Amino acid sequence: MAVGPGRKVSIIPIEGIRLAAVKSHIRYPNRLDLVLVEIAEGSTTAGVFTQNAFCAAPVRIARERVKNTASRYFLINTGNANAGTGPEGELAAVACCDGLAEIAQTSSRQVLPFSTGVIGEKLPFEKILVALPMLYEALSADAWQSAAQGILTTDTRPKLASTSFTTANGSQANISGFAKGSGMIRPNMATLLAYVFADAKIETPLLENFLDSAVNNSFNRITVDGDTSTNDCCMLVATGKGSLVITDADSEAARQFQSELNAVFEQLATDLIRDAEGASKFITIEVNEGASEQECLAVAYTVAESPLVKTAFFASDPNWGRILAAIGRAGLSDLDIESVTVALGDTLLVSKGAVDAAYSERAGQSEMDKDAIRVQINLGRGKARTRVWTSDLSSEYVRINADYRS
Image 1 (spheres, rainbow, N blue to C red):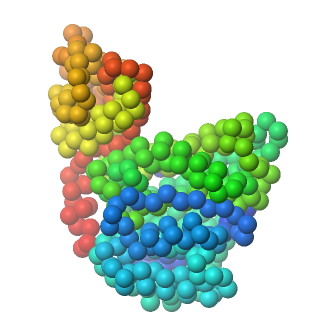
Image 2: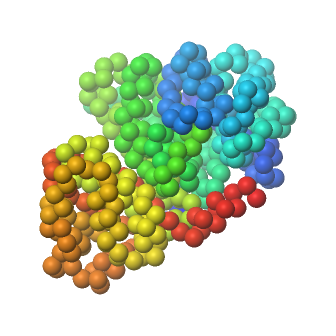
Image 3: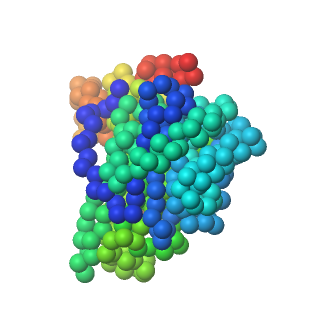
């Protein structure tokens, strides 16, 4: 179940990147569940990881290795999160890295492990070790679709995005990436795995800045259920194989690269929400006229994560009182309710602290019947603004998560 038709994406291969996906039967038979990404020597890599204190063993390893060693491989498994597994989980993750390093004739520390799936179960690393030779042999510059398919868990379709652009001085650059995530999604980082690659040449400190900005405006602006997982990672790689070289963060080329990168990240992030567990609605919540971005975010997330609001969206019920109540409990000090306006699309619901005089239930119903809904909240307190994407809360979401381990 997903909102709207899937996008047909023509992926631009990134020079210096090869990928592969195979079936290793970690949890399910006949399902791609083991993915390998090979990164050319001389590339730079940056990563952003979950803020959950119970972060998974592969997160701890990848976070340390990306800071201290040039990455050559990403090894990704689904079906098992290798989280809540203690020292044994780290040994299992390292064993997988060691096994690949021996085949690829590289240092094990240049292999970064990533896992997603059920928490608290031992990683069946023996299955991964058996599959590694076949996985390595399958590496290809064109295996983007299978790699994107191979990292899915409860997702119903792969998420990919790609762009190509030319700077004012004639340098061309390509950016391509893929991601997964359907539930347990909330910022810091949102529950997901995401891998984005560019052929530009960018040193690590600058690449980290590009990544932080892109994540803040995309994956850290989505929520499905308010839960932050143990395994979230987002990686950005610059292979340096193209003609674009960025050394100055204030240059026009840097600004253009950031804009194009943001667009790729935003597409992947919104694709996650469109494919959220049990989703039938894609909801954009815009909060304007706040005193600060933080208070705008507080309002946006209080509305987006309210079970009452989300179930009203699922029922296509224009119960605007639930939105108003969420705004009121978002923790804003001295909120002047008569300055607040709330609209669904082009239909004004609330003004001067009450239902707008021109509002009709028919107009509200017309907006709620859509599968893509825009909520606009104006606080009347300043000039700050932000935007968050979310989904509704359906009976299918409950079923998926009730049956997750069965």
